[in-house]
Every structure is written in structure tokens, then in C-alpha cells.
Image (tube, rainbow, N blue to C red; front, side, top):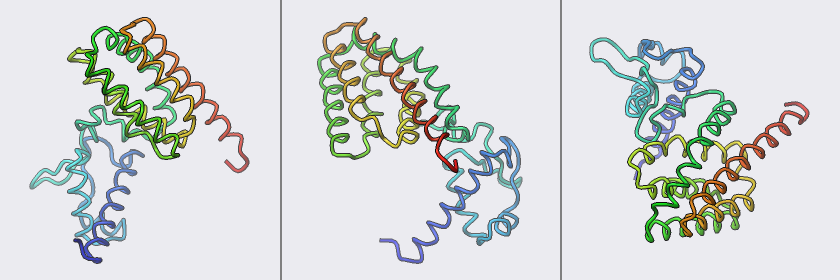
Length: 239
């Protein structure tokens, strides 16, 4: 197990990495641009050089920074583009605008994905989709975060299309699902249960038209309710 001092250093490095990410998000350091030296960053962030070094290593592993031996450290040309986030959406600062744009893309992609899933899902695919629906519902009813299982559900639907491209689009969908949970504070549970059931039932019946309609309704529901939540936030005093 990590000792207390080692844990403290690790936590400080993570905090420093987060500060550097925020600077990149705010365009203080732009994609492809060289960042200050280890010593300069240590002075600027009021941490040790070893903490900066560890933070830079963490961000290099996440493809946020690129270490070029003998030349220095640079912001990646496409910060954060990795397997689970190939478009680097984690590093978009305006989350509300990102969510709206993601929903627009999802409205084009996901009804088609649901339709193809209804055409091509195997019995095993249907079992997995139903199981994930049950898990999402159980988490919601217990008042726990269901986002991780929600992401798995949408992933399973995409895979059941048997289209080799559809699963590659999953990170776009998953980022939208995760962002919806963040912005809505995991609210709207009952409606999520119902719309998921309609989608999974249509896929199980191999009814492409119904699956498309159910997915369209699900996305419209998310769009309308997050718009309401955000508008209510804007009306609160002091915000």
C-alpha cells in the first residue's frame, strides 16, 4: 500500500495535472505549442519540480502533452484523443454547447443504430441489452449513479448492429451520456427507465421502425429536459 507521503505526492501531481489541463482548455497553451520548462511551471504553480515532472508524465500518458527529448514538452496537436475519447471531447471547455452539439449528432446517428440493432441483434445481444436495462433501472431506483451502465447499454446497442463502423462511433455517444449525467445531476430517472425499456423492447421484437422512434423519443426527451434544467439554473439568484 502507498504510504501517507507517497499518497500526498500522487494527489498533488494529479492536482497539478488538472491545473495544466485547465490552462490548455483556456488556450493559455495551445495545441502544438511548447509549454514552459519544468522549473518555470514549478514556480508558476507553486509546487516542486518533481510534482511537475509527475504531472507531465500523467498528461503524456493521456496524449495531452508530448515529451520531445532534447526539445521540450508540447501540447498535443489533438489533446486527449485516445481510444475512449478519440475526438478529444474531454478537453472542450464549453460543456453546455458541447452537449447540445453532441445531441444534434446523436439525433442523426442513434436512431439509425437502434434501427440496425433491431434488424441484426442476436438472442445473446438482446439478453445483454435487457440485462443492462435492468442494471440501469436498479441503480436509478437505489438513487445511485447509473451513468457507467447507461454507457454500456448504448455500447451494446451499437455492437448489436453488426456494422463494423457503428462501434467506432460509440465514444461520441458515450461522452454525451456522461455529460448528460453531469449536467442533470443524474436526475430524470423514471423517464430514463421508460425510454430505455421502449428501445430494448423494440430491438427484442426486431421492429426497426419502433426502435428508431423510441431512440428518437429518448434523445428528444434528453434535449428538452436538459434545456429546462439549464434554463432554471440561469434563473436562480446569484448565478
